[in-house]
Amino acid sequence: MVKTTDLDLTSSTAASPSFRSSAVVTPTTAGFADGSDGVTMSDRADLTKLTMRCDPASAAASWMAVSFGSARSDGDVLIVGMRPDEFWLIGPADGVERARADVPTSGLRSEVDLTHGRALVQVSGPRATKMLEKVCGLDWSENMTPPGSAVSASVAKVSCDIVRAGDSYLISCDRSFGQYLIESLADAAQEFGLTLGD
Amino acid sequence: MLIVPCPHCGPRNSSDLRYVGESHSRPDPNSATPEQWRDYLYMEENPAGWLIETWYCRSGCRRYFKLERHTGSNEFRNPPIPGNKKGTKA
Image 1: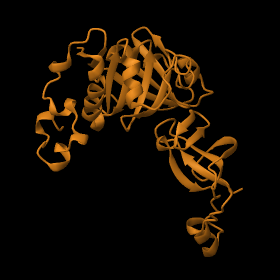
Image 2: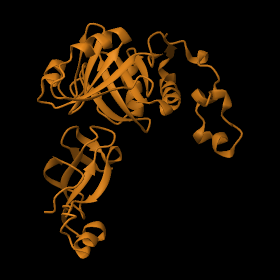
Image 3: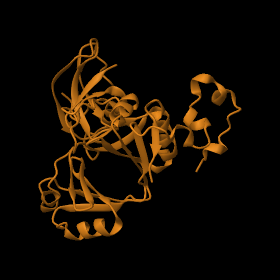
């Protein structure tokens, strides 16, 4: 993985002001961890992410009890209707395993553990929506994407899956884009005050 | 900016989608003549007018669907049709 400190900032592209991102050129993010009312960002990549594909009319899909584009909590596990025939279980490993064991096998087509394949960032705080609006073209007003929505969209030009819970967002992308996504979000959050969570 | 109506995700910026091309039905490979196969692979109608085409929602639902678009005005008409990559010729 490319670390911030490994980036060659002397090349003409990186040195160009239009390409400079203070999130990239700042080795640590401590410089803008001052906004208690702004945006809090936490790396949640350690949560287990299991994707299950099944026939939308099957018993397995009924058990999920979420439609495409919505999410619900089942204990400590988040069940997300991410695509028309694809559901994600997100949560601690034991919780996801418990939920997985409950899913009926009827109509289930595949299940793949994406834990190590996806980056996952949690962005929260009263200005998180404002921050997301800077880097994602979707309408984030509450009547279009209310809490409990699950959408897939481009965030900072990266295809991401996003789950909204109140003012908190879980943003997931392929792990090879994770470093870039976190730096982009940190950059976007700077003006609102960024606090790094656990 | 072109706003494309995805049947699953709703209106989306075209940068969230991939334009696949004109929607042609795939001939049966067991019975198609070389000419039919060549037409399927390479020949486009490219009209200045209404065209049924296939799009792929790459940043959203990851589904193929068909749309009717006016190539001159970029208008869309009729609801998008969920489908697959093969499509069907109008």
